[in-house]
Amino acid sequence: MRFFLLFFLSTLTLFANFIQLHSFSANFTQTITDEQNKKLIYTGSLQAKEPQSALWLYKTPIKKSIYIKDNRVIVIEPELEQAIIKHIPANFDFFHMIKNAKQINKDTYITTLEGNTYTISVKNGLIVALDYKDDFGNSIHIVFSHQSQNKPINDTLFQAIIPSEYDILQN
Image (tube, rainbow, N blue to C red; front, side, top):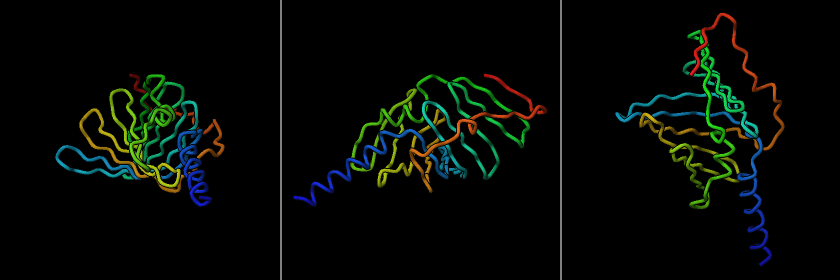
């Protein structure tokens, strides 16, 4: 009985860590598979912080930085010497997605955001993978490693600096 109670409490804590997420850092490998089963693999790192801040740093096969802050996305592409600025819906963020996820089994959660269904895989209270289909029918599989949750992240990390010689495209 005592073992069961300890097991139950530890499981509850793991679930709480996942749902009560305030910041998330990790390395990632993102595999995009198109309808002809062709794959493109990206690697990089992610830093995210409530309420709606994130920085995706893509390292391979090309360098790219994606800054998300307060309903705005800035994509900086050094190889193209351009920055793309887009506005996004207020609820379109990582933390909104996590908080609205529904558990479907021990380590799997599903949530819907802007018409897309996202599957979140969790192990030992840490997010280990994210799967979804994009608007082009591609299957996206992101695997996270070296995760850190609910650790302080400086807000200045999410401030994009666009070099003055870059072209700026706005949507």
